[in-house]
Image (tube, rainbow, N blue to C red; front, side, top):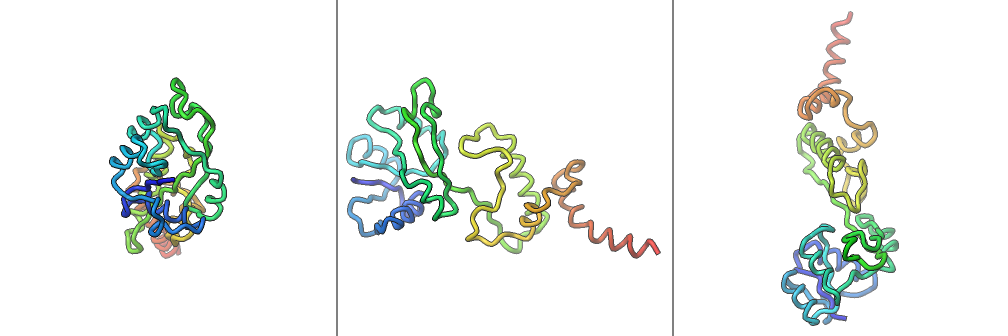
Length: 210
């Protein structure tokens, strides 16, 4: 099979490289694994110059939606999806139910197993702790209110999934104890400030009380 996996610098290529490597296939040395711009490779898939196209993108990407309307093209079900999930903690296996992408046009035509990548929220070690806390609270609310949840579930993100990346102390505290209680009454910025200020307030009260 002739397989297209996007530009070398793309996330799709990086993930593809790891998937093939798990089957002892060297992407760089294999003549049937092609790289190139996605637009060009989609044209090649439609024309028959490619047999398979790997693409990591949003489930409702118009490019993919239009492509799946082509009667000669279908989603490929991954038999080893759960195995990939077990061996690569930044991947999650999902079943796309028949017709769930488009009920009227029955896309896909059958239940299809795929893998989805984990979105990582990464910050520099010296980033202000208050800003880190604000990012976590905003991300949680954004996912909770989103109407585009196809693979994810509400309250599922943020979470510490990729243990190859060290967890921030701020994130560790957030995951163990949740957002600061004052966030129910104040804005993100004020809540983050007060959360960091509590130790100083307690010390001040301890000194003042006697």
